[in-house]
Image (cartoon, rainbow, N blue to C red):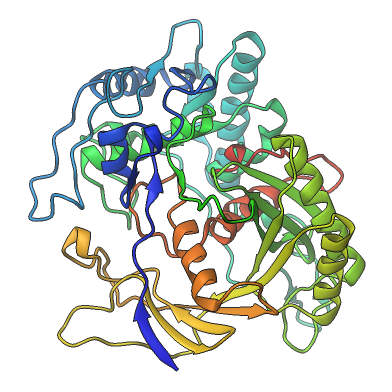
Length: 483
């Protein structure tokens, strides 16, 4: 066993310049695709919401064209200013909206939503807002639809893990979960699921994001204004087809794609588990591929694929990757939150051999098994602390104290993630370096310290949306439509 601290991975920005922090990299050098023919110099957005919400949102978007000062804090690197969003600063792009690309929800529809409660209110809101979004997308060429969700609408509680059925008094299984997904739904996931078919990414914002007079949801704290501007505009830029930042790549390395394999509950009662793969290249371009049903759970109580199912999932992922990028990778890294069975490993290897890949790495990434690291003093371990348990296993702190921020930017004591490699083609340290870099590929927030690699963090977003999509319906390939 040995311990060491991995250096913070640098990201690539405009002009191939590098920095460890997304916000400072963009402010100093511009986005990674600066000057490229496909860079979105204008982010054309469509707006959907109530008249009042949209007026307030448009005012705030106009305000964000200019600099928003940094939070008055002791930690200027943690809370930097937002440089403004225009062609000569920051993302070097501008947000464009118009009355023609604005659809307001009628007062009558809003009254219907307000009069209802629970599932009925949620269903009416989703229907009204999705109808306007579809109509807007049909008659306008927009890159992103920005939806100001109804302020007073309450999401329904999420179910406890594994909840799907209950027993009747006589002990029989009651099919009370025929509508389990809807009873534990929320506006965000339902809207995303119902609008996958329009092909235009949707950005949902709460009024508390752009209106200081409105409190955030119960249990949530409000970020400072500059941070909110950063997070929204980076998400819009990515959804509009831009590349805010990309992973640094050594020219000597094989062209690599990263695949996260997860499972989600599908079917009317939520009991059928289906595999899904999230596939990313080093630029952060992501595609989603739905696989086959999982095998019945075994002794480890985890879902798994058959050998043939694993092979077909990876082949489908590589097909989608080729359609998206017009090339195939030389190396594939598969991340999974459960152990690889022998059949799964054989299936993935068979697919790799079929496509003549140069290298395949199968990596199991989970929460740690109770082992912790400590450092002298009161501060938590540094982000990047690696405890190497063997040549194929280690514990990695992706959350922790950060020298660049001069603090630990968290509320609770961080815990490491466990990395276990099956017949690795690289050292466990090199695989941990990749996990560290992939933890920064998050376009929903702009700090440098994500906990999970993008391959697995996106799994939760994709699963939450796909549980509302019929298994016979096609799924959208582009990850931007799920985030």
